[in-house]
Image (cartoon, rainbow, N blue to C red; front, side):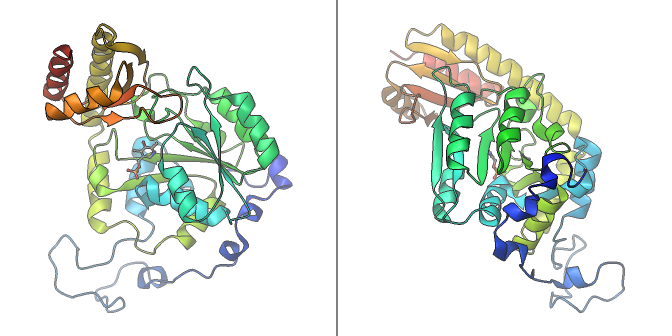
Length: 356
Ligand SMILES: *Cc1c(COP(=O)(O)O)cnc(C)c1O
C-alpha cells in the first residue's frame, strides 16, 4: 500500500503515535534474532522434550504462516496484516499506541463495549456520539464531534454490535477522510452481511484507516483468540513492536490455519445462519409482545419487546440465555439473540411462542 501520498504527506501517521512508542526499542526474542533452518536450537531456553506438534517451542511472534494463509484465503495483503490475541488485544494496543490521557477516543453509542473499557483502562477520555433514532450512524453529528474534539481514534463498528446494522462505505469513507486521527472500522461481523462493502478498500488511499477482522464469529474459533489487524505497514510495525512478543499461541496459530483451510464449511455455516436469521426475524415479528425487529446483517437478531427484563428472566427459566440490552441508550426493551444451531433456534422459538 502506498506511503506518504495525498494529505498524508502533510500528516505522517507515525506522528499520530505516542512519542514513547515511536522511540520504543522493542523486546528482541530469540526468534527475532535468528530465523531460518538449523538442526539444533539452543537459543530460547525451551525444553528439548516435546512431541511432533512443536509445542515445546515458542510460537512465531509475527504469525507468518497464518498471515500467508490469510492472504491466500481472504486476500488480506501479507505486509498489511498482524494477528492479535483476539481483536480485543488489537483494540487495546491501538489505544496504547496512539492515545495519551490528553487525547480522546470517539465511539458511536450503543456499540461494542470493549472500546470504552480499554480506553478507560488506559485513562483515555471517551467521547460518545449517539446513533440516530433509526440506529444508523449520525454522520453529521460524528463529523461535528470530530471537528470539535479532534479524537486520536474513532471506532466505527459495521455491522454494528448490538444492532446488526451496516453503515455505507461512502459514509465511513467521508468520516475517515475528514478525521485527522485514525479511524478504526471493526468488521467482526462482515462475513454475515450480504453485499458487504468492506473498508479494506479505503486503506490504500487513506493510511489513517484501520480495519479489524476476527476468526471468533463466522470462522468459529472464538476459543483460539485470533483477531486480525489490517492497516498501513507503519501501523503494523508499531503494533508488532508494542505487543507482547508471543501474543498468539502456537496452538491458536495452527488452529486458525486449519480453520482457514476449510472455507467451504464456513460458507455453509454462514448461509445457514443467514437463512435462520431471516426465519427468526419473520417469526419474531408475529409475536404479540414484539414491538420491533431491527433488521440485522450479523449472526444475531435484536428485538424490542414490551418488557425485556421479564422476557430475559423467562428465557433463563427455560435454560436459554440471551443478552438483555435494555439499559443501552436507544435500546430500551431490546434483547439481542445469537442465531444458534437449528435445534437451538427451534427451542428458542418454541419458548417464545409459549411466552405470555
Ligand atoms: C465479537 C466481537 C469482536 C471479536 O473480538 P475477539 O477478541 O476477536 O474475539 C470484535 N468486535 C466486535 C464488535 C465484536 O462483537
